[in-house]
Length: 50
View (cartoon, rainbow, N blue to C red):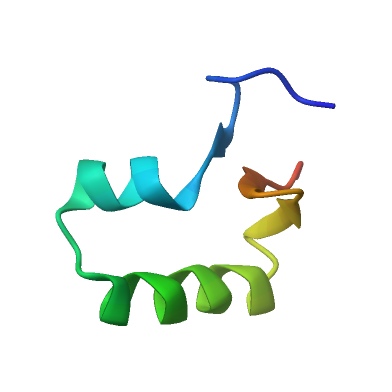
């Protein structure tokens, strides 16, 4: 499992970092997942390896 700070971020932390509301955040994270930019591991989003 990836370590914290190494390409993973939980949604609440991403929301704090970007200032987005939950209404925009969740669809954006789903878009990243469908575009194969990230994968969901437990409660975090992890960047995929190239």
